[in-house]
Amino acid sequence: MVSQCQKEIVADEDRTVSIEIKEGDERDISSLSSNEWLNFIIDARGESRSGSINSLKPKIQKVQPMLREVESNKKCYDPRVVSIGPYHHGKPELEAGERIKIPLARLYLKDSSKETVHELYKEVVNVAGEARKCYAEGLTDFTDESFARMMFLDGCFILQYIYGIVNAIPEVSEIIHHAPLVRRDLFLLENQLPFLVLQVLMRLKSKKHEGEKMITAFIKRIRGEPGERGGLMEKIENFFQKNVWRTQSHREMMQQRNSEDNPPIHFLELVRRQYIDSTTSSIGCHITGDWYSRRSARDFTSVGIQFKPSKTSQLTDIDFKSTCTSGTLQLPPIIVDDITKSILLNLVAYEACPDSITDVGVTSYICFMDSLIDQDEDVKVLRAKGILINFLGSDGHVADLFNEIATDLVPSPHAYVEVKKKIEKHHRSRMKIWVADWLHTYFRNPWTFIAVTAAILAITLSVFQTILAAIQTYLTAHPPKG
Image 1 (cartoon, rainbow, N blue to C red):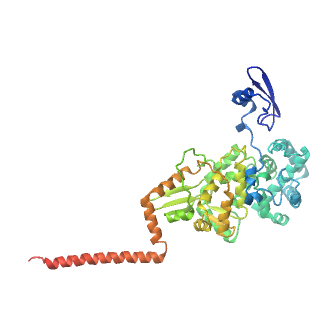
Image 2: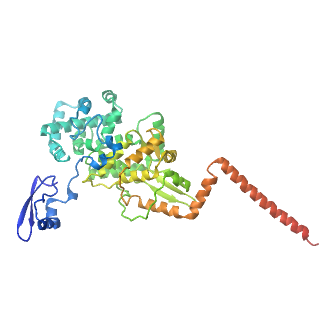
Image 3: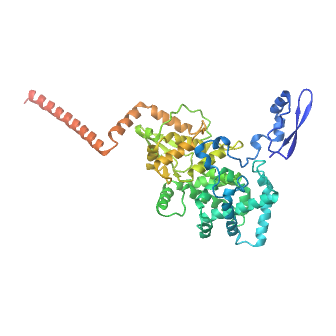
């Protein structure tokens, strides 16, 4: 991070200029002459002294205005029940949510002595200065004391809420009557707490890494991974446990190691790490892809390309396999419910931050899915194969969701390059397309299959009878001698 106030010396032919660089300003160079300005840009020493953009620590940013311009998505970025951090703090419409923080914080602290709680608060005060730097400059107009109190209260609230959901604590449900909306609010980009604050507070109840494991378990529940559910959800989770999630233990171990070496900035980044596996990401593959034509899921099935759930839920786990007569596109299974749109949009907003050090993996996934989904029939195809688990409503609602989220988004040109090349190669094979079209036309329902089979048998029998008649005629005309 750039120090509070640095001096930058810029040399030019005639004079030397001293420039003040304040924290948060990339360069204060508006008063320089053209020569000085150009010299400053090309001066590698100046770059190394003040720190390159890549070396600056990313902040908890506001959502970019261009994303808020999409009318159908506007409400997905603002909290509806509870504010976390400074950006939405004090809004009148969130006053009721503010009142539920203290009871949950009290639950989180109830097994600790007053001395322990006071010591814990002092630890939060000690990191409050660093935490303040995680927010955009000029948007944290709070005294040091009020800011530290906000960090402490919001952090205790978040951890007790997560702890209560993961462990099904009745008191949490009794205090919070809008638990699904609170859950949604925790995934908003502008509603984040610096993770270092949560790390300090987690020491109260958790051993090393136990707190992170609890948060990971919470995220898994949101994504539909194994947890304590009942009825239909339990059956779905059992299916995923046997067929999908079991293969992820190695990935989770790698993610934990990555978290230790490079802790997340905030809760939303930890969520993104669950969606995008940086150890196997294909998003960053810098290979120039051939032209790829957009086709819907129905278009794929009509040319013999089938769909199958991937072995993991990672958004990068997309693959295509081709055989002599057909192809299979593997896609990660995803549960679509009432908070899916908000989560995906805020992950996109995080990737769009000017200081983001991530690729656009979530953005690219959404654009890829949007290319497959034009209408409800496409959702029906993917739902039937277990790729889309629809808890939102009709298939049309799911189609609208992906179409709305993808509005004005631009994917990485390198995303899924190999997959797209394989699909295009398969589609350009006239023999495969002809066979697939023939199978699709004549074998898509049992009556057509029976009719075609009967016709083939009739033709075969007719040919056989013709051959027998020809042989008999020949033998009659040319009887064997002797």
